[in-house]
Amino acid sequence: MNIGDLVEYKKFEYAAEIKKGWSGENKYYIRLQDGMELLLRISPLAQYNQKVKEFNYMKELYRQGQPISKPLELKVIEEKVFSLFKWVVGNDSEEVLPLLSEEEQYRLGVESGEILKQIHQLEAPADKEKWERSYQRKINRNIDNYLACSLKYEKGELFLKYVKENQSSIAMRPLVFQHGDFHTGNMILSSDKKLSIIDFNRWSYGDPWEEFNRIDFTAAVSPLFATGQVNGYFSARPSDDFFKLLLLYISTNTLNALPWALNYSNQEVQTMKKKARDVLAWYDDLNRIVPSWYDEKAMKKYRI
Image 1 (cartoon, rainbow, N blue to C red):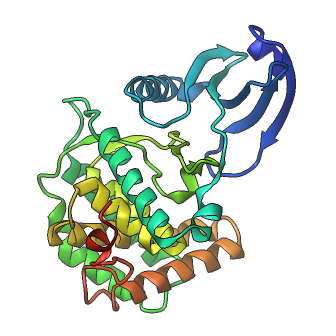
Image 2 (image 1 turned 90 degrees about the vertical axis):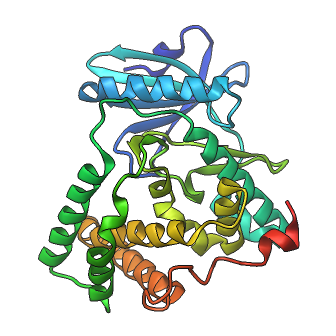
């Protein structure tokens, strides 16, 4: 397949495969002769329905003015699904955020929370399974995966205990459209400090609060950005109910992270072990529900 055939409405100049990420898709950076930059994602035909929905959700968010990659075209060629988007110009926020002032980190975090709030305005279909049923299956599966894993975390029993004691908190939670992988690794910061959200390929329907389940990755990059994110989402300090449920979601994910990493490399295993240590430190061995990275004074101090 000639990548240039996919952009026949413009003159194709250059393409480079993108190796970064865990999507399982083939991704390419494309530059046209007029300087326009594009992102091409190639997915198996079996994912066609999922990719069409993703594309349409992104079109709606872009129409609303949300800072995401502009969807351009989706079509099937040679038993593959090709999705074409406008390239988001900028740097990975993970690399840039630590170089910014504390106020800038917090401001951008608030901005990310406000963007996420708008993403969650897209409703899930009325016939979707209730959250407590679908997520209870995930809890059970992650517990089983961790117990069957040949490796264990130091103090891993604390995650098991917290999940088992707090799993009833998922009852009666709403369902919305989720980005599915919302953290600093999927955010781009332009040279003029404008934030954009990328990589919707893990989209799903779920509890809006569960979307914060990767905030431990974000907090490791910038605690103030993470603080701003939750404050921006709620336009206030979040409730203790939020923090309690967030810890359940983080603990559930942590249980499955080690079995997942074991299928890849020792480097990933060590990364997940460190993440578990960070979570235990932030939450004082899960004896507190508000993590130590959350800055209680930030909202008053920065007045964003």
